[in-house]
Image (cartoon, rainbow, N blue to C red; front, side, top):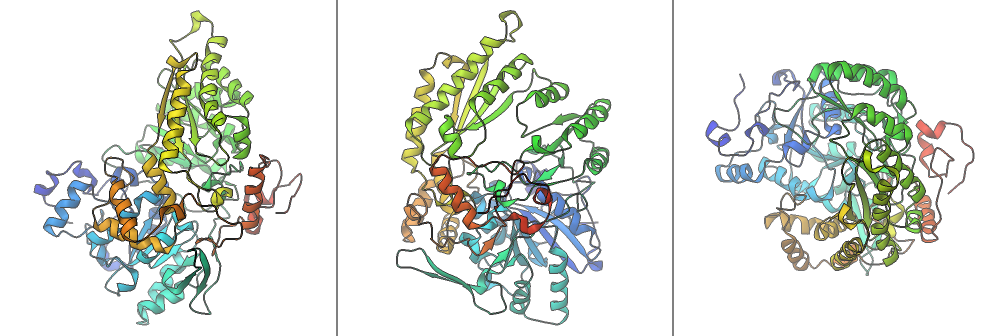
Length: 627
């Protein structure tokens, strides 16, 4: 019988002790003496966030299907337990076995957002693993990073042995076999890493050298050994239908952010929004066949007891078999009294009809994401959404019985003017007016409620806006105040509520998103000063971060507000995500000219993703435009 790593006394001192005891429904137990490879899969945030991440559920299931491998889970201890573990010198442990992480062969960390970087150091520190990769020996696990942030791994390059670039289903078996062979042959850790660096999609940062120009930009980025690749191409699942997917996802004891069965219906997006990193990274669009999704749905609901099922996709409305799948779910879930969640739907007649069938409209609101307040700026970002479509969608929704609408916008987008900002208030007002124009007084379910929220634009690698300057904190707040005041001027101001995001954190996210290796020392120093859980506003210490940048001699403006030349070498240019830099450059120039680009369903625009020969890229095209 396994022994818990934490005593009852400690568990009674911390918030939500169920975060740390494991043994949840569908968690997987194996016998350690029959296992060749032990893998700790980590999400560097609190349990409730990490347990909601589909990627870890997929990899956890896949790795545990390997007979020679036991994959366990580990999350960031909340600050209350963090303090106790440091004081009592308790090493960080995996949930399943409760064994120390340092005793594992691999520590895999999924990196979903930049503001978790100090939590990565927390995981290493509490595990007793040297923070710098060059200081590790075979006494330590191989620390491997994956997820969207590793498409620019340079700000955290010093802390990782390997970065896995791309989708995790394709290369782990080869990596684990290589590891077993190298250990059997008594090869050194460095020899293993050198061989791993020659596997497709694997990047070992200590084997690559960066040289800088006098102005701080990159002069060259080259491998130290001739046998290593100059460019690293992302790994991609070409057949999404027949790859791994968990039929028995782990069910937490406590309520998590995503407390439901999740069906991933497709990967990628055809829309081509120029601010959206995911839309570029996950090209080309690949669908799962509806027949197997129906099987997964029934099995997962039966194996978990969940009372809600959600369809996961960047743009669910673009899934070609959506109507068939939704009708199946409505028919089967109605009997089981299971709710159906349909995020990322376009608001059109079909979508509203579906939502009326699956939602209690008295408890729900509809979400529109115009992103920009004016049509000019929506053209700049290639949103592909006109005001007419937005207002028509709102009218259909109001006629269908909804009276609450959430609107999402961004402030600080490239070329933004005061007129564009005022457009946020004006569009919110027009949507409120549509309610009173389309719904007779006797049929109204109270007043219309419009919640308009703005986030601050953060330029990301591998988007057309990777060349764009980012606003300062002061400029962001000025734009938010302008938006707030413009809303107060509207006729329907009492029906409109306005929220905005924190400016400090948005600037920091922008620094880390486009940073280089020089930021490693800043992140390390900030962590040593107590920065942790930076994604949580109550724990984010902006003053300490600013102080640390100054002490390290790093100019924040270099990473945020400066203009970038079209031919500048970026820290992430050694990665091939499938979308060519020439295409992104072309899209940046089209944005500045306010020109839109058709989405992938209309025509191929020659982004480069056809090299993978799968998904939408091998479907018939009306026209091909080379980048």
